[in-house]
Length: 122
Image (cartoon, rainbow, N blue to C red; front, top):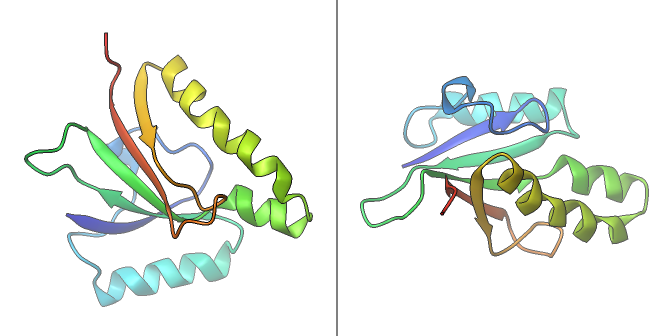
């Protein structure tokens, strides 16, 4: 299942129930809402929600297609700081008892950041 959504702040994991997401697929209304959000908040984060498949070992995933930190760093000509900001993600989620995996980042030149979340492993 692929849903487009947007984050109005840097805090992503309040709860899945609070995320604003479109129903399965990318409807015209959903695309218009995302484009409208980008126009209203051009420095914000844009992401796709990734629901786990039957063989996946995750609770859910998020593919960030636009990053507020990357935009801010570019605007201030300080892209060198991005690996330090991205590097804090795993530590921050671990401190909250959440296991996070990510194999690529926008800051590293990928098309999206691929966050995958699951319960903390013992």
